[in-house]
Image (cartoon, rainbow over all chains, first blue to last red; front, side, top):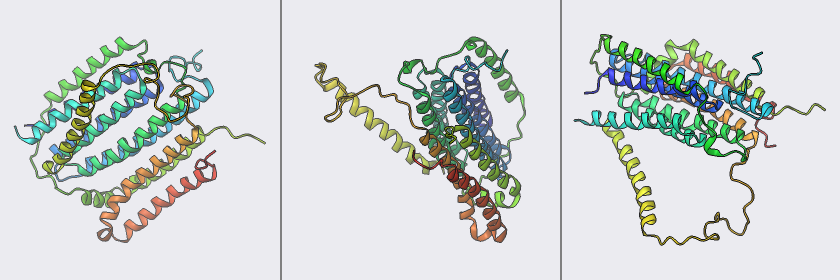
Amino acid sequence: MITLNHYLLLSAILFCIGLYGALSKKNAIAILISIELMLNAVNVNLVAITKFLTPGDITGQIFALFVIVVAACEVALGLAIVVAIYRDRSTVEVENLDWLKW
Amino acid sequence: MDLQVIAFWIIAFVTLGSALAVVYLTNIVHSALALIMTFLGIASLYLTLHADFLAAVQVLVYAGAVSILIVFGIMLITRGEGRMCETNTFGKYKYTAFVVIAALFGVISYFIIITPWQVTNGIVAEENMGTIGEVLFNNFVIPFELAAILLTVAMIGAIVIAREVKNLK
Amino acid sequence: MLTQYATIGILFLGAIAFGSIAMILSRLLQPHRPYSQKMETYECGMVTRGTAWVQFKNSYFLYAMVFLIFDIETIFLYPWAVKFQSLGLFAIIEMFIFLTILIIGFWYAWKEGALEWQ
């Protein structure tokens, strides 16, 4: 029998993998990919809680829909910024992007 | 073992395996391909949760559009000079981040397990796209229009940022 | 409900099995005698130049971005179209405002030449 805890633990593992990538990777696009993994984990959480705690109520799925919209806007803007930085500096390694620090 | 249980374990294995591949592969193109596999795994996870409209949205938006955008972004910033297998390496916080994540996962799973969830075994609607339409267009009017504004702002902003600088004549 | 979608999963597994079995069989059965001309990239009549990893044009990225935005428009349009008759006039006005806001963004993209192939 698959309970709510299975889904929540799966989404926790997925979130932690995404956060690990976002904290430890060098490439800026890899960090964006990891953030997408984290947002997907949150969506799995929302849909699972809707199904097990309030079946018949569809609000969690609509919330997940809006999270998908925001995530798509985030990836479009984030990649645009990465492309602009690459055109200026010819690098996307985040450890080299420290010219705001003095 | 019924179908639900077998499907869940297969899907969980594939999703988490490809998510690990996203983080551990050092060629960024391979990471992007593993990311598409993860998105498809999550879409089938939605199917096991009776959310078939969200599964379709996941395939359409994530596996379709977002992954295309990410692959184009990779192609735009990759020149043939360096070696491709070193495009996605770990930074200097590799081990620190692992300790932090292990602690975070411990905390999250502890609270998931000790929380008494009020599980109600109600019947989930078989066909939920119509329900989503009704609730979305009656109760969520303002967020819906805000989503349009957000999309427009994101599109204009991304075009302004990503476009080549125009030649000022 | 899940059993309806199990067909897709079985098709997926069948596709993976078909491709991998064909590749593994050909790897096992083929004679393996490589020489330099055999190992070249297969391309009719042309000598290959440079590496395969070239930088793409910026236009691809802008196209993909506009596609992403209007892909998301579709996911709102679809439940609206399914429940079009029972939702009534209010939903039509809502969708009209939604589309107007998005078309302003599309007009801007058009005006700035994001859709032109340079």
